[in-house]
Image 1 (cartoon, rainbow, N blue to C red):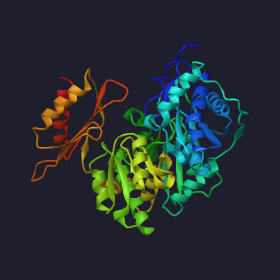
Image 2: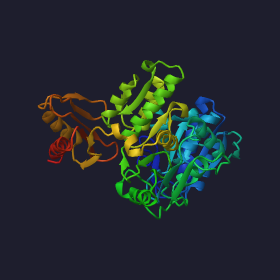
Image 3: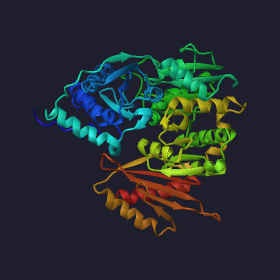
Image 4: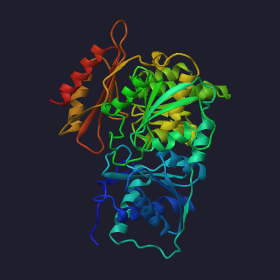
Length: 476
C-alpha cells in the first residue's frame, strides 16, 4: 500500500480537511485506531466517547473512527448529534477521552475531528496529535496491523439533557428580568443546544427568556450564511433581527457552537475582549464569594486580547495570566494556574467549572445573567469595557515572515516601546501625559504564508497611524 501523507489534514490543534478527498472512512478509521494506541491505551481508558455535528458526512465518519477505536479492543460510546462543548461535557462527566467530528465554521465540503483526553484535556500537536498522525499514516500504509484482541462494543447515549442541566446549575437565570433574545444558530449546532438549555427542550423549568430563532434548522450545507460569526457579513441578519424585534440582546454561534458572539440592543457587535472582561469580573467575584482570596485567583487571556482585559482582571484583585493564541495554550495555562476563567479574542471562552474547556453556551449564559440582573440595556452594561479602539485582525501575504517582522521591529525600537516575543512580536507603547497608549501584535500563521496584525490604541487616529505604519512595512 502506498504511503498516504496526512500532513495537510492534521493541523496544530485538530484534524480538518475536504471530504472525501482528504478525510474519508478509511482515514477516519486509521485515526481512531491511532487515537486508541496513543491516548486510550497509555491512559488505561476503557472506552472513548464520540459525537458529531450536523454535517452530512458526520455520522459515517464518526462510526468509522469508532471502528478504529474498537479494533484496539476498546468500547465506544456514541452520543450522536452534539455541539463541541457537548462532547467536552461528555468527556468530563464520563471521565473518558473523546472525539468530536466537526469542521467548526468551515464550509460544507469540510469535516474534521477535535480530540481530547479524559476530562476534556486537549490533544494538540505537542500533546499527542503529531504521534496520532504519524501512526495513522503507518496504519494506512499497512505497516501496522490490528492487534489480536476482541473488538470493543458500540453503545449509544443521549447526553443533551444532562448537559443542559449541568450548565443551568452553573449560572442561575431563573431570577433575572424577562429578556427578548434573538439567536442566530447559522444552521449549526446552536439550533440543537439552545432549545435544550435556554428554553425547555430538555424538560427543564422555563426561563424568563423569549427566544427568537434564526436558522435553527440543522443543515451542514449552511444555506443562509457561513456559520462563522467572526466575519462581519455573517452577523448582518442577526443585527437586523435584533433591531426588528426590539430585542435586548443577540447571540450568534459558530457551526459547532463552541464560540458565541454577542450583539447589543442597538444591533452593534460587542467585542469578544469586552465579553472576556465581563465574565472575568463575574467569575472572580464568584470565587471570592466562595471564600477565595482574590490574589489567589487567576484569569487567562491571550496576547491579542484588548489591553483592557488584564486591566479589568487586575482591578478585581485577581492575577491576569497572558498566554499564546490557541486553545491548547489557554487550557494548559488554566490548568497550571487553576484559573477560574480564560478568554480569547476569537470568542472562545474557557471555564474551570467546565473542565477548563471552552463553551459558547456558558459564556452566553453569563452575559444573559449580567444583563438580566439589572435594568440597564446591554450597551450600558458594557459601557466601561470599551476603553480602546482595535483594528481587528488584518492578514498580509508575505514571502518571508521573519524578515518582515524584523523590519517592523527595527521601526518599533525607535518609538520608545517595550517588546516581547511570547507569540510573534508584541510592541507596547505605554503613553501618558497626553501621549496616547498603543500596542500591536504581529504573528505568523502556522499554516499559511501570512502575517496577522492586531493593533489597539486609546483613540482612532492613533490606532490608524500605528496600523498603517506596520502594514506599510510588512507589505513593502
